Length: 238
Image 1 (cartoon, rainbow, N blue to C red):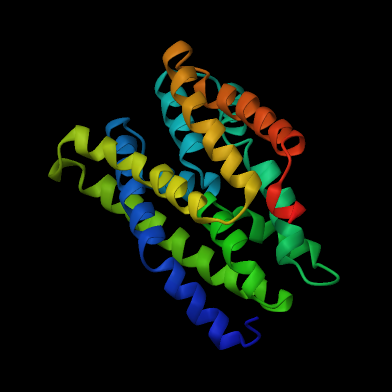
Image 2 (cartoon, one colour):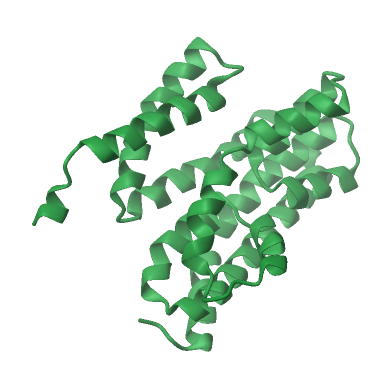
């Protein structure tokens, strides 16, 4: 059990400076180039990355704005695209907070939560004393968000330096890394969700590409939850 603040900081930096920050840098580079081609200003690109902090919601913002949708429907679309953060926050915050959580700071901390920091926290928190988990999360999240904002700026300003297919293809590096990271988490519910959600995502994309993410999350998540409760856990029996 790690109970030293410096050791926790080093661990968070070592975990974040690598594949998490590299994949975020690359995927947000693709997003920045997409924003530039949509005719939106650089400030909007940075605000979308820092304020939404979720590629599905960011892409929804750009696509609906380009389609001329009203502000109400843009906000609704972004909220639905990033609805997955609600169960992530509910499951994550109790694991991170020590006794007597400071509610006002939780709002700022939640804004920095991403699939990368969520999965990294689930993996590392059992090794870290509870009162130092907030430090791990904060260091990890700041590094990841900084890499994402930097990637957005690079993609926006350097859109002419790379072909469009390559720039857009970079967007998929982050979810690919998340799938690999989640597979390494020794958690039965996470593995069931990954096994169930991956094929359903392909099926729903072919059947209803406009609703594939929403349907995969609703159907796949419900099915994974049901299977986790119904299928016996051999490890717990032993």
